Image (cartoon, rainbow, N blue to C red; front, side, top):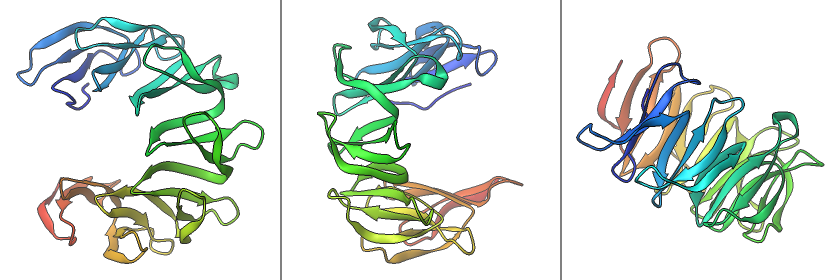
Length: 259
């Protein structure tokens, strides 16, 4: 089992997926943090989430690039730091609440949300406990976009992909919560490098739109990922043969497709 390289290190594990032992290798394949964790995730800003124990009862903390815990394992779930804050969960699974800790491990936003995503562009998507709806908070924990969505993804390029509560279709809102691209897609991801992957409601195939909502790559893929470095991973067939390739921003294959 292996993650992906970030900041020169990659988490690798041995054994069963939920019960393995994880450590970190460098780009030469040499272990720089010996396998010792019940779970380990990618490094961001010099820190990585690591779990002591199994997935059900283990505790999550944060390690540095030497493998030393800089924030002791004490949380029931944790996500990576983004924009100086990390989403963490406390409590049993059914009653778990999420909040945000700062770089010292102290709560900057108390755990009171049903779910809590990472901060991007100063906002984080969270689920309000009473309504079970998604909205967006700022770094003080105040709702700046009221919880009224069925689902919401992180902001990117000044827009957030959201599922409309009434129609179950996806569109994009600005930082005031106003729809700038009306709900019309079966599903959607955030904008990266000016394009967002969207799923057509009728064909259920994926294509890409620009920030005005215009289709620039027609829906033709069974699955489509975000653009990074001018390339995006797409699947021509996802379930049967897992045939995939990489396209450029015109939709032309620059590698593959292949199994």
